[in-house]
Image (cartoon, rainbow, N blue to C red; front, side, top):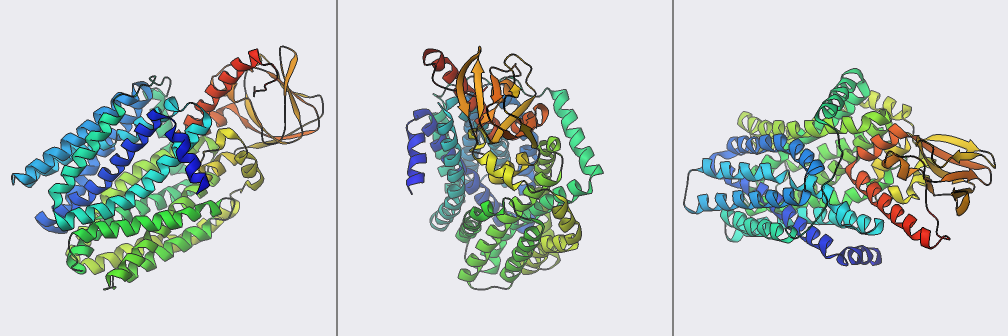
Length: 551
């Protein structure tokens, strides 16, 4: 509780960050609430098939706009992108509500929601670029990222419950009305914010080359192909469940459309509760975890197919949501361990693209299965997808897991570094995998002021003296990092580092460091904030020579 209060207090001290977080909370409520309401409305118009087709139609513009929004956020004002995105969402939700109020043809409702669906994809890229520019120091940035994560987790559950209540007491159109007000308010909250337009980023040609090389790695590597394929299959299941929750609540359990929201809430709650145990996976063998979570997910969903009591269904779907979260983290972590460090970002980009395709495939699979049999048969069939794949692939999974290195010591060391403090545990493990052990005798110059930057170092044992202009300014020990400023700014070393005692360290070459940091948005944001803080500290040190810094 004290830790939670501290994190909230750090963010609350910044009016700009609080505006952003509150706006994001409103956005999360509308994103998930509108998705549930849209499926309920489409199901009421034409059954599961219509709901599946409408879901597919919403995913297509999202898949197109998502990469464009990321590029705009990298090169233009993220505030403008976010405000325009929120206003377009409000416009789409409002138009959908009006269309329902005046009994307009359903196609007009779907078209309005397609506008909102495309605009939804602007929020996260814009926020990823905006948060670092609003944070005044590393602690504030980390606290903001943690709070945003909590907002998303709690918001998903709250959206399910709130949407259920609105559907029970009023109707679908009221979900769109409330969403219009919430996301419109979000636009007003972020409108006064100011940030510098980010610079840099890949050119279009470079981005295309990176994507092509990622697909090439998937084609060549059985390891990448298997793990990326499992992630895609996971999203086929998720896409099917979006439709099946509607059918289960209305046609199977006969509980009414409000229960679509409650079932989504149960599923999300399981992800939050069991997903918290993902930290225990760091440094452990993951092949058995992938298979076990896939089987448990399938069993829970399979029992849901024959369950008739609402309480039992709620509990089972909580298990489904929790095991799905652990399956996702385990598979992504094993992918990070098993592929070259410079391919991780590209492969995850491909996985994200395939996840969108998986959602679309699942939204079509569910109504097809219902047409062939019934909703319970569809649930049972979807329940079998991940267990069959995981059990079929158990041998290669165990082999991949056995061959993948688990850098336990390196993970522990990286946890002590401020630059990686806010990094999620699985991503931290991916970076640790690329480290190289180095040893230095006393008196050895590890890096020299003015030399080109080529590596990042983390001290595991011993003491390193830092000098600028020939004068000692600091003594660093275990848990300190060396060289991030020069690497991130593509400059030269800002100080000299000399081993005062026998020194053990881990090193990451320049290309791998930049690939690892820039390939993961939260890590890149944290790193940039740290560089700003270190430079500010360097300015203060000129007035107070006893204060140290990192070269």
